[in-house]
Structure formats: C-alpha cells, structure tokens
Image 1 (cartoon, rainbow, N blue to C red):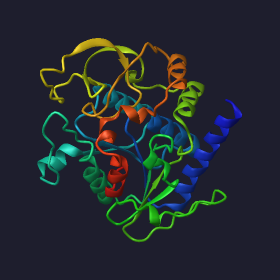
Image 2: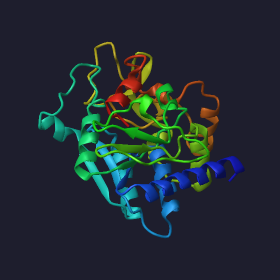
Image 3: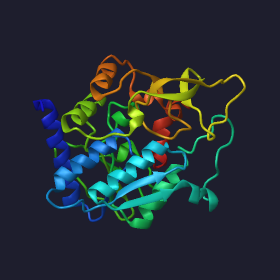
Length: 297
C-alpha cells in the first residue's frame, strides 16, 4: 500500500475510534455499495480484535438491485454483524410518505423519512456513512462530524470548524451526528484500496450483459419498477454500474471492465463523478443539498 493510501486508511480508522470514544450509541449506514463496503472493512480494522460494537443499517427502498441485497446478506453473515433494516414500503403502507407515480418516479427521496424514523426508534447518536467530498458539490461542504438537528436536517451554518484533526462530537438532546470517515478519499482512492485489500464487491460493478434503455442520455436498467414510454426501446449490451443505488434512479455505463484493474483504468480517464449516473441528483441544480437539508444521507 502506498503512503498516501495508508495515510487515508489511518485517518479513517482514527475517525471511527473517535466516534466510539465520543458517542454512546453509534451505527453504520450500509447501502451495499463500494464506499460502505470499504467503511465496514475500516471499522473492522478499527475495532479489532473485537467484533463490531454497532449494527449495520440498511434503508431498504424496495427498489434495490437483487445483487446488492444478496451481497449485503452474505457480508453480514460472514462478519457476524447485526443488521437493522428500515423499510420504505412500511412507511408507504402506514401513510407516512406518498409514493411518486409516472415514468420518473423514484423512492430515493422517500427513504429520508424511513432513515430518520429508524434513527429515532433506535436512539442512535452517531451514524457512520461512506459519503465523500469529491462525489458532489453539496458533499464538498460536509464536515467529517456533521451535526444534524432535532428534525434530522443539515444546516451549513451549524457545522463546526475542524482544525488540527480535533473532532467535536458534542450534541444537544435530540440531535445526532453523521460521520464520514472517508470524506477525504476520491473514487480512485476507494478502488485502489479495494484492490489493495482484495475486497469483494457486488457483481454490478463489473461488466455484464444487461437489458437497458436510454432515458435523457442515460442507460437505465429494464425492470418492472421503471415505466417506459414507447420510444424507450430496450437493448441488451455490456454495461456496469459506477454507483449502486435504486434501480429507478441509477444508470449504467457501457464498459468492458471485467476486473478491478480495468475499472481503475476506466475511471482514471473519467471526467465526471460517479454520481453523474444518478438521475435523482439531476432533478434540480441543488437536488442533493435540498435532500440533505431534509435529513438525507
């Protein structure tokens, strides 16, 4: 492992241990994507030789890729972690949220309600997450210890300075922290670390044949969850996914990358972040920031 990557690893482990030292009831938000997989691996290193003292939390929208859910269950069983699942469908059935309809319908926004409900029910005061500053401009504003108010919302004016690696985990009653140990990593750093540590990933990240259709210049997976117009004709091609979200808002990219080395070659020449393939981020200029203010990841 090169020096730069080793320093990023040590920083992340230090942050996770600060969470364990300063919070009473932490958890780790786990999507099944590469960033949260790396975060779980770092947490295991930070806690070794003990087992993880906090649960993995997955917010299940009901629109996840089957490959993601299968990988999640395998990982949880392998490391012996406790898994807490928050169900968006449960909130829809209870009338707490209203499901979108139409061709561009997504449950991405709805999961904020489920996330906040799950945090409140379990009384978590710190939630570790795999967000990175290079992903999107709203992410770039994040502190490593990001304070969320009693409603789960993010306000940039309430964030604290983080000087000399001093992390302030003090919160008022009803508030909680979102903590991002790999905030300073880039997509390339993540992939190099995955290669270095030989981490397993969902097969979605590597090239495979899949039926897709084109929508607004993006390749969307064919699924009963996505309503297609007569002009959106399916085709079977070789693709992979740079990011793993809901099927309803995550686009594929054409690719021949069958292994990690090929993936690294591809993203080394990429000109946009992997979140450029997320249609939910394209709904408005400040889509991500609006969702964060409402309590999103």
